[in-house]
Length: 230
Image 1 (cartoon, rainbow, N blue to C red):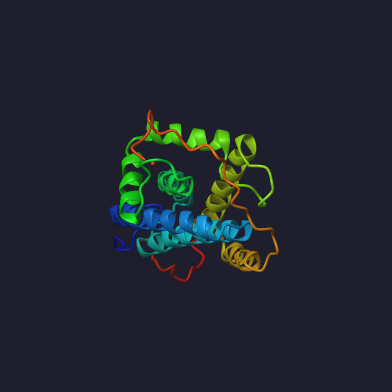
Image 2: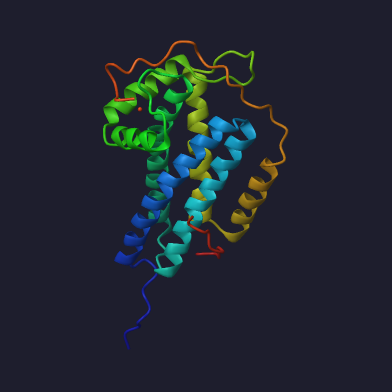
């Protein structure tokens, strides 16, 4: 008798449909929240906490969809998490550039949320312009660890961005394809970060504004309870 239950490695098209919808909803919301929280309440604690929580949300959501569609191919889950994490960082940069233009009082910068969102969408679909703006930010830097500290830029800023990506990706992979024990550790670690006494990030911004003349026109998913998918 043919079983009506899907085989563990069978790929249900509904999984990919829900995955795409989930990512399309979560990415812009998270990018907007992440960027503006960092600008308004900048600190290492907030950065690490939000980065970890987003990884939990991303991986937990994918894990929930996988369970509902009986998709147990862990390798594929890991690959899809990586794709979503790359898109998350890219979307974050697209939102960040218009917001930092406002902070630096760049001439012609969007002055309200609607205009910033429009500029973010513009940059999202023009990666070459986004790359120019992000490269400028990386070269000159826009913030410091303290009010009188040196501006963080270049290799150090690149490492910080990569660390954010690695934390989010690692947490998401564990939530999507890890064991219940590993997931519990991630939850506990994210809670501990909220009580850390790390120094706040200062707002020591460079005096020179970003020249956009040759660049750009400015620049909940509830996590379901997770069970072992193995």
